[in-house]
Length: 183
Image 1 (cartoon, one colour):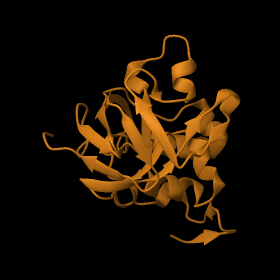
Image 2 (image 1 turned 45 degrees about the vertical axis):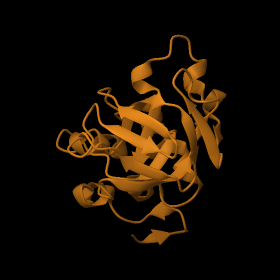
Image 3 (image 1 turned 135 degrees about the horizontal axis):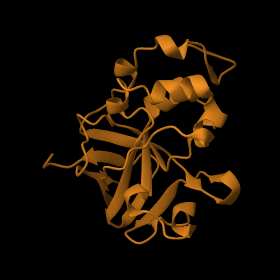
Image 4 (image 1 turned 90 degrees about the horizontal axis):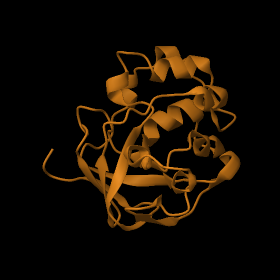
């Protein structure tokens, strides 16, 4: 992937082979970035976090909302897709996904109900779609929003997936991201 200025993608994103970009390990990947979302769209980039069944990522703004939806407790994004859109620098935190992982997140590999282990914690992929929204368009542009929401690309989960915590535990940078048997 070619970059200019160390951060911005140089490719025309409309011509990218998203099927190729959205790949990655199908069963054994790793956590590349952890993002704790704070009030007012602030971000914290811890090297280790705790996940809890009740709170999701402890300290994340998800658990601070009134009546949080357990179907969208945790968000994961493929790091290869994120880097294609935002480059390799500080903009990666702007997605607001809790975990950027090197793991194939497409529906064919991780359908709803699939279990994942991140570090010590266990997650279950939910059926809640994770599509680009107005905040995403403001951060990355309307053209990118149209790409991630394109009907033929939605099964690749370019915008990521939602999950809920099934078993609490610690997750750290570089932790294994493992698809568990059964799906």
